[in-house]
Amino acid sequence: MAIYRFRISFEDFDEVVREIDIKSNQTFKDLHEFFLKNVGYDPEKSSSFYVSNDQWIKNEELAYLPNARKINNAIALMEDSKFSKFIDDPHQKFYYIYNFEKPYEFHVELIKILENNLALTLPSLFKTAGEAPKIVLPNFTPDDLIGDEEDFIDDSEVEIADEDELEGLNTDTEGSDSEEEEDDKFADEFSDNEGFDEEDVEK
Image (cartoon, rainbow, N blue to C red; front, top):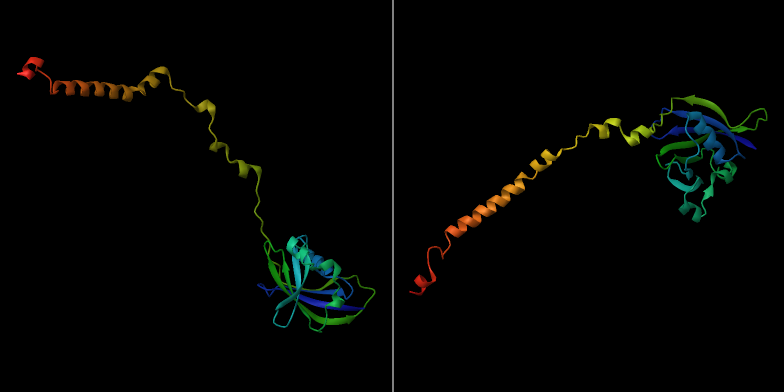
C-alpha cells in the first residue's frame, strides 16, 4: 500500500493550493470530506471527481450525492471508489467539481507517491497556500419575509366618513339627473308640434 500526495488548486484561484497525503486504499469521498473541511466548506453537497487527461478533459465520473439521472445511469460513487483503481499515471489528474448548485471547480493532480507510514493518520495536510474564497449565502429572517410594521395599515388610523360626507359623494349623480330634466324641457320647447293644433295641421 502506498501513500499518494495530491495537489488541489482552485481553477479560478490558482494561488489557493492544498497538498494532501492519502492512502491508496482510501476513497475519493475521504479526500472530498477532508479537503472541504480544511477550506471551510460543507461536504454534504452534490459533487464529482472526473478522471482526466493532461488537458483536464473530463472522462469517467465519480459522484457524491448524485441526482436521479446519474443514479439511473449507475454512476460510480465516491464512497465505493478507491484511489488505487484509478491511478494509471504517476501524474494522474482528476477534475473536481464541488456543489453543482453553486459550483467551484478544482484541479487535482498526483505529485508524489510515498511508501506507507503506519505512524501517520491519513488523510493529512502536507502543505497549504492561500485562503479559500468564502461562500456567502443570503440570510433571511421572518421579518424580511413579513415586512416592516409601517407596511401595514393601522385600523385605528382609518377615518370613517359620516352621513353628510357620504351624501356629498352623491352630488354628481343628482346633478346628472337635473341636467337630463333640463334637456327634456329644452327638447319640448323646440318640438316640431309646438304651437300647432291638429286643425291647423289639417288646413
